[in-house]
Each structure stands twice: as structure tokens, then as C-alpha cells.
Image (tube, rainbow, N blue to C red; front, top):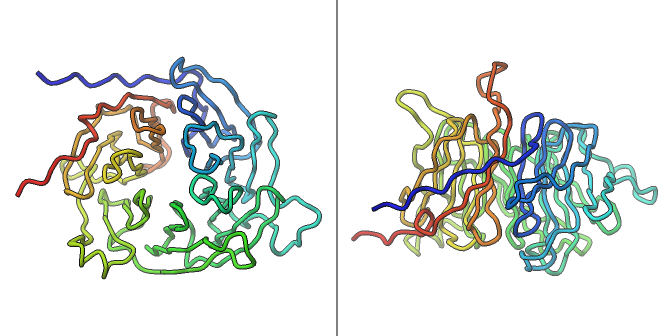
Length: 356
């Protein structure tokens, strides 16, 4: 007999407007950002809201600063990307929000916030031990900025080929997906020296439609890209080398119902089974896939509305899901914005051996 699916549990007192990002800051503590301008922290076991901090401006992106490689530690700060272009730091223990770049000692040219919305934010602290307080932000102003959270200063700003739609960081590798279907790869190994960001690649996505989300493999060798046209591409950074390993890029259809095609809004890789990843779509569906063996592993019961964000906890035994309408059909009545947490069974995410 099949093991019954675990039940998705709704967190109490969820955001009051569109949910934009989720990240675990401790094994059972989940942070969220929202268009209502608040950052929230929930306990995923009791489901209770432990903290709410208002910033007065819609928040589009969120990242935590886990120390070194200890993912079991509790983050001390959250970094927030805002609709007004500002990059904010939230000191969790002190419950204080400050704006990066506000230091009087920094020059206006390098320290200014994004001139348009800061759509993406990431930290290097959980991957790069040499630079534990690095923050990266990217925005609709077509710029990628690096910040030093210790000094509150912007170190460098580089031009992107288009508006930033998605960003991810693994070790020294930074992935930024922009408008125009561009995929940019950067190296931040020298982030604590005079040169911060080195561009390695600027290439076109293999998908024919606009990129909605992109995430690096946990080992940083490749990426999963989701588009507005219900499709995901698996691509490799060094395609020539990957070909010698019998790994070639491919794409597959997903989040479709008959003739209706839904955007793929978010992708999250499993932290333990590193070729397994889940996708969330505007159909309210969450599906777990095996990138290496090109297989669909499992799908969760449908959620009330579009999946706006996904996050695994540190060991991959729990998945947080933001069920939040993303306005792909314009202004209309829609279910309330909610965050669900669901236990993930080993059988739902363990890669299956290739059949030969």
C-alpha cells in the first residue's frame, strides 16, 4: 500500500499581500517577505508567528546570512530588496531595520540604492568562508551590486544586460537571469579585494520565452531555468566539459493542464539529494523532479492559487510553500495569501536509478 501524503499545514497570521520570498533562518524558523512591506518569522512546528517587522515599502526579495557552512545555525540578519530600490538589513535579535548604503563615509556613486526595484538579493555568507558578510543585490535598473554588511557600503556596481528577474549564489558562482532571456554568470571569489565581481558568461537561455526563475545546482556546475511558458531547462555552465561527462542540456514541459500553459514561478533544489528539485507554478502545483535522470519523482496536492515561492529546510525534510496569486491573469478575485509547510517523505525526493 502507498504511504499517504503528509498534510500541508497553514502558518498562522500570514502576510496580507502577495508573498515574494521564503527562506529558513534556523531548522524550524521560516522568514517571509511580502508586498505588504513586512518581514515575518514563523515557527514551522507550532505554526505561530514569532516576529513581524514593517518596513513601509513593498519587499520583493529576501536572503539570510548563515555563518560559514553551518546551516544549522540561526541567521542573525535578513537582507531585503525593496520596490523603491533600497537594500535593507534586518537585525533579527535587535528587531531593527536599517538601509545599506546609508553611511556618510561612502561615496554617492557607489553607495546609492538601485534606481528601480531591487528584485533579487543573495548572500555569500553561507558559501564563501573568506567573505562572510557579502550581500549581492540586482534590480530592474539593470545593475548588480555587491555590499559589505559590516561597513554598510556598496563595493561595486556592474551593468546587467537587462532587468534582473532571478538570482542565485553557490560558492563563488553567481547566476543572474535578466529580461531579454539573458543568463549571466559571475565569479565573486575576489569579493574581499579591490575587484568584487568578475563576469564569466553572458548567454541566451535555451528557452524561447521570458525567464521567470533560475537556480544553480548545489554543486554550482549547472542550473535549472523556469519560463513563463510552462517549461524548465537544465543547462550546464561549462557545456563542453559536461558533454564529455555525458551531460547535455535539455528542457521539459510542466505545469500544464490541457491547452492551458502556466508560468513556472519558482525552483528550489533539495539540500541532500542534490539532483532533485521542485518547481512551483501558477497552476497551484508543486512537483519534484530528478534532473540527472530526467524523471518526475512526485507531485504535491494542489494548493489554492499560484505558487509564488518555495524553500526547503536545511535537511530537506520540510518544504515551505507560498500560495499567493502572482497576477498572471491581472486583477481578479483570488484566494487569500498563505504559507504552508509540508513534511517531505524520502520516497518523494530520492532520485530513482536510471533504467537501462
